[in-house]
Image 1 (cartoon, rainbow, N blue to C red):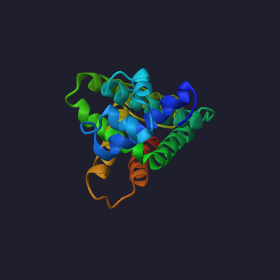
Image 2: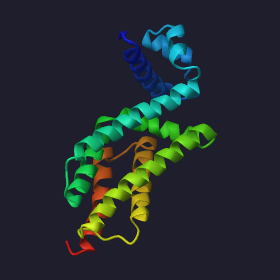
Image 3: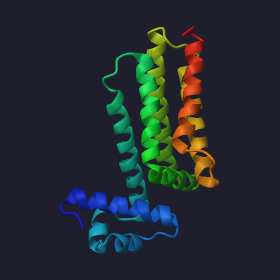
Image 4: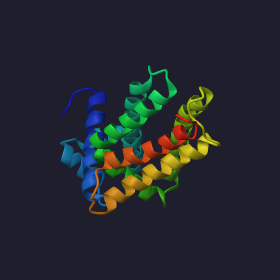
Length: 199
């Protein structure tokens, strides 16, 4: 068991991710997470008062780590199209390396269909995702290398397509690689934006 408050919390979250992916939200109890991680019940309840609180914190923890990795990769790229290409490439590679979180993400969304608190978390994530991608597209338009009548509509299309790819991947016996399929779809959209501007 890791020492230090933050290390203990991270250990709890990673153990919870494994448990939620193995048995699902409804069949996973806090006691089961404590047992699986060799965590005392007191230590678990010190950090999380309820399973819902742990579930939501896990989404924020791994989701923020995913976004931070993508942003750090493209932060110093000034040229808009190069930054956009790097953003998509890095996002797809991180997706490949974090299929455990993608599987959890699917569970999180399904619970959000009936849980207002989780639904709001997903709504906030959706809004942030659309804002982030819209800004990248707007930079490309401002520099004259991309064309789109509505950057937000394009950003929504990218979001919906991404959700569809990984929802399908985890609900069938897939005949495709998650990251590669995601990369191909998004690059097709970006190619259309570039072609429409004569690039």
